Image 1 (cartoon, chains in turn red, orange):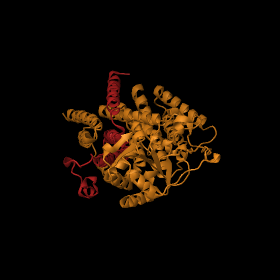
Image 2: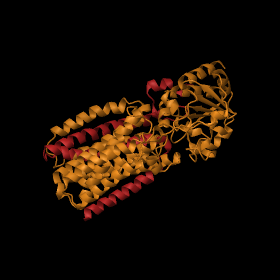
Image 3: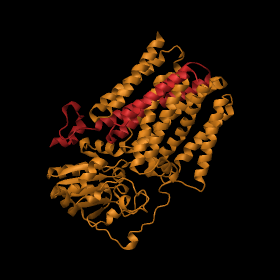
Image 4: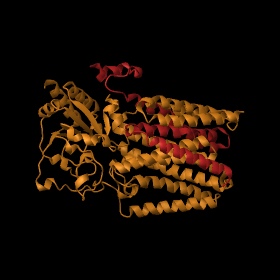
Length: 114
Length: 458
């Protein structure tokens, strides 16, 4: 084990600790968005895939890299979109807050119409 | 100079990721926070693309475009009811990316990988590979391609433990002798098998735990990728994902009063317990939609207990419509959400939010359980095991000890039920035979529509 490996372990430990502290405070209400959010965030492995695909280190690395880039991009794009789609749906009661400005189609169904 | 820029984008991305997750502690700030996290992701990608190491862009562009083409419909088109399988398949994609990067590292460096790097790469492909097949199995079960029931056979646990033991031994051997490619690829093969065998015996009701666990594994695989290629933002994001999945699995296990081991090795729901109550001649009381509507119309407080049955029947919008009518008559409506209502953590909240139910009406089990005594009506829609008093008082019951919603404490209980079949756990529910309980038989959506129509005439 060299110094770099130890530094990486420190980073991992601290990040896991921060993650634990934050995530225990996420209410059950948002557990599904939380899972899709962490999934989208961990698709940062795209960064590693890009290097494998683009550094021209032989066809095997390139091909494995391209498949990895595709898979990770699916999670980045799909993950952030669907998380946003879910979070958009959580709204206050009873009158719709003006700042949230629901879309016209949603507004028609709003309970706030009363 | 370029290297500094790259590292700066990674640093900013890490901060935005952590802030994004922190924003999820409050529903109002959540959306904005996650949008910032997406910006962080974009920055990190740009920071990577300008690196010296990357010399060709044609293949990268192909992968990015293809991934975007597939990713957009997976974000915009997938219905909220299909969220569990959608998340399961995305764990597969995430783990696949990590595994392939690990294989590419090994292919290039092989025996030259030092002990520390080999450990990282080994961990990466081990957890990555078993998450790939495990998530695919989970997806298959949730989507109905593979049977949702648990699949068990004699000696299953022995096979699984042996398989796992051999894989771990290979991993240890590789750390000492990184050069042995045959062992490396065999280990991946075995890890792929473990993923299948691990999820095979797990029944549909246990899916929330499995999805959370796979979420954790996918995160750990990503973090290991960071160790392998020396990238801190990967380590941080992977650690966050791993921690999140781990916490959620614990929350889910607790909500079912089961340990990890019990979920993985217990094969819950394999043999449905034969109904004992009906045999002893207890009968249920059924109610007409008209009478049920009258009860609801005069109730001061109605607590709705939605279960997976409601989601299956796609009846969320009818529930909301009914709730609005009750409110118009002067009653109050609250929703009691059990942590395992649905097929993944928090699933029921998303389904109700989609149906325009304001989130401040959705209550966790701990918040609402004290209020049932005050409730005039508990309206149980397609939920079963989560309101089964046997969890409290029947030591022989397989769900004994599981925390439940105290629907039986309400003044009146109306249960919307398709038929008298037992729930997912295959257990008879004594709530249905309670004197205060009346059952409204039929498809949840049809029954609710009838209730809505009746409510309008009351």
